[in-house]
Amino acid sequence: MQEFDIPIFKKAYELYKNFHLIRSSVSKQDRYTIFLRAENIMLDVLEGILEASQMAKSEKLPILEKTSVKLNFLRVFLRLMKDVKSIDIKKYALMEEGVDEIGRMLGGWIRSTKEN
Image (tube, rainbow, N blue to C red; front, side, top):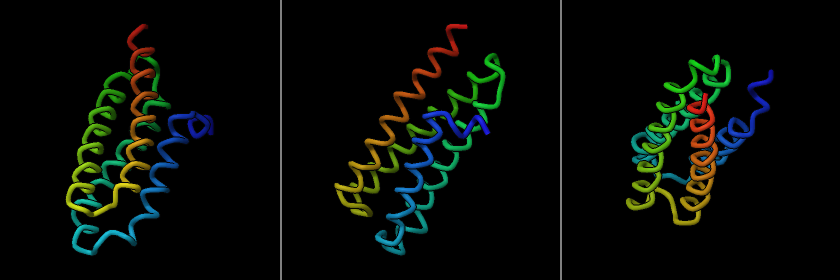
């Protein structure tokens, strides 16, 4: 399927896989609260990217903008996880790097969609 070949989808997919790997290192109390919430937001971002990739150009913008908001929520939750020590600084940096790259790609996609 073509939508699985787009770079932003691949990047978001990899981010989720890396995030999933740290699940066991998160305390049980945080795993079922903040970690789960961040994981669900991450899945929403992945879903938004997939959904937008299958839409006509004229229909993409609202989905991309909603996905961008979700990505910003994810940034906040990741920072909060670091600050309450659910994840260490190294894992945070890895996750934040992926989120930043997805954010840049998403911003470019939004700009190119608006240029229509």
